Amino acid sequence: MTFFNKFTLIFFTALSVLTIIIGVANNTPLAIVGTISLFGVVSLYFKSKEFLAVDKEKLYKLHVTLEELEQQKNDLLTKKAALEVLVANNEEKLTKLATENNKISTTLKSKEEEKNILVEKTADLQQAVAQSENLSATLTTLQNDIESQQLIYQNLQSDIERMKNEHQTVIERVERSKKKIEYVDNLLTDFELEKIKNMDGIAFENYTAKLLEFSGFENIQVSQASNDQGIDVFAEKNGLKYGIQCKCYSSPVGNKAVQEVIAGALFFKLDERIVLTNNFFTPSAKDLARKTNVVLWDQLSLKNMISIAISIDPEFSNYEASSY
Figure 1 (tube, rainbow, N blue to C red):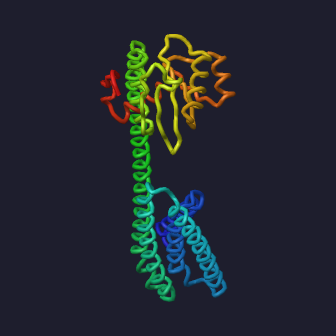
Figure 2: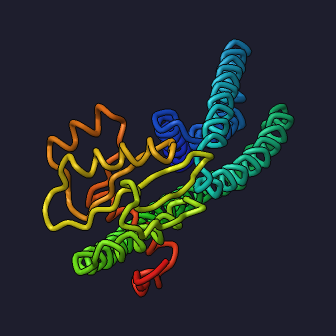
Figure 3: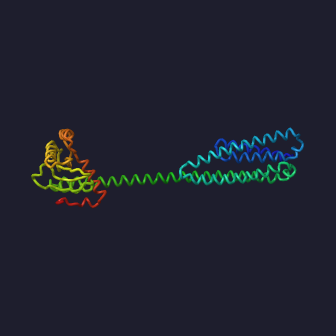
């Protein structure tokens, strides 16, 4: 064996071992490709002229080494199968990577067929020596294939990262749109609250009746009578009869409104009694309502009802509360 052939053999042996180490460390198909490459180098060594001078015992040891390499190849194939299972369980965006893995598997099968051909020709050592240049070319092709697959994997990682960034950008745009909608909604509801401040009692009752429509109530009636027994608006929902006392005040609502709605509910035999105001309630009114099961709708509740109405019908802000 010439110095050049020895140097070539050592170089490709080191390259194959390095490929196996990198593949095993990163749990990638590179380990399989490195094993095949090492097998080719060993086969080349078997086919050199120096192998003709070795005795049968050395030949046996070389065959044992070949079997060990075959076992390592099987172990690496097992790891490859586990890797394919892991890739199959990844998110939908990694399907491109699974497709590339299938291409690698196809290439591996092709190289496996080449390895079987080389095993069948092991007995003809002289012919293998003559084919050494072809084996070197095969090793170069394998190295090029490895580099190509690495480049594909890097491109896939870049695509995945780009899609993540685009997804995050869409989320940020949606959040900004939500904030804008919330801001506009607050402006409209605040405008409605200011408009309510200028309403008289009857107008506020009509306005309340219109709001109840958007909150799922039906059979809504406004009493509009001085002797309404404490109930300004009647309504029904989910089979229950409601009585609402409406208070358009510039100051917190006290006990009297709670007492009026209790009396009105008893008089009209209603299931639920509610006091609604564009302001808030005094602590005393809240305590009385809690102990008598009266529902209190303050400015915050009213604002939420207005927001629901506007979201359903943007023209609600143009509603005139002169009648219902």
